Image (cartoon, rainbow over all chains, first blue to last red; front, side, top):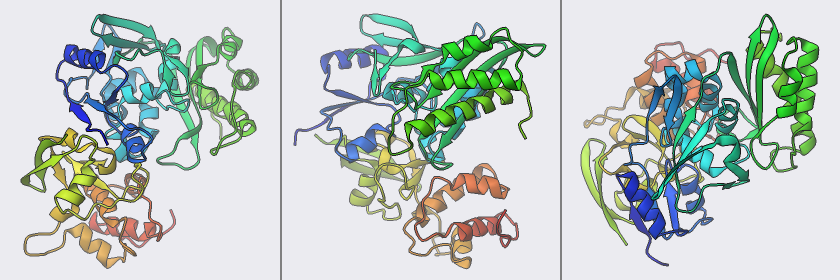
Length: 284
Length: 161
């Protein structure tokens, strides 16, 4: 077996340079919770490992009212941070429910997005917040809306010599919520997850955003369902019809976690609950 | 290619020569002869390899050894006193028969210790959440919860809710 080479660059330029030099051969390790498991099972045989731990990309701050999160920020930190809870409640809730405590202590927001799992728990809250990702390489940076970042399962628009360095989250009026159904309560992948953002005025929907995970090749926004609710009173009948439309926008598959039929049924139920949750309508 | 690694293990400095693909679990068990963390699934699901990194539980099987350079790692080997007196958690696990085969026990002890350091008086729900990332195929969950409750000064007898 070939010797594996290891780098832990402390500057972004250096990291970008290394990625360029080892283009296509380098495996980037952030928290490692996904990729090291794959190495242990020989699904990935790296030649070059680049660890991002020394890049100082572990931060949560506010800039011009927006929430700015470094790509290496661990999930636990997001789940406990008051700024995240205040500005993006759904992200805080999703962070608290992903993996298990020991996994959340290592797993990073950047890793969760780069993996591009259709079931990524942090993707749906970020999609309803119209989050942007900052991608960097030697020649410069570009900022891309998250809804254009995912291409398919495990695939993103990230180029081989590019790094995800930061997530920028605009702030909206209104509230957000995240709900997830897994096979069990802890350390579980989502069978379906949803994030909802709703801005209400006197019970009427001024603005709505709905995202679903694990029901299409990528996490998705449900634009038709959102449009169906805008300008209307948020009452049980309108919520139900919106949730049905959202389920119709999905392309779920049968897999070991659930059937496509079940996923569609769960989509409607979860969205209904999430909207009622955000709108403060009692369900029980 | 091998790289030098040094970090703090249970209060003392250790050095090892490791491959980039070696996990912290590999290095602890195979190079440093620390045997309390267990290799269950090697994918982060079972919790048996859990250790403390700077006081927080992590999966040593999912942590590349080189990434803990200069950091502080603690395993169950650090729990008992030098004279052999068990840590209150270990004693309570013993009292309640909270280990059957014992394979998952070190990992659960680690998570329990981290919980009590961050929250000295957790309620039952908080205890359950703290150990939710651990699989015990013998099914000692109730005894584990009772043992942790004993340490935090609750009766540790109530079952069910």
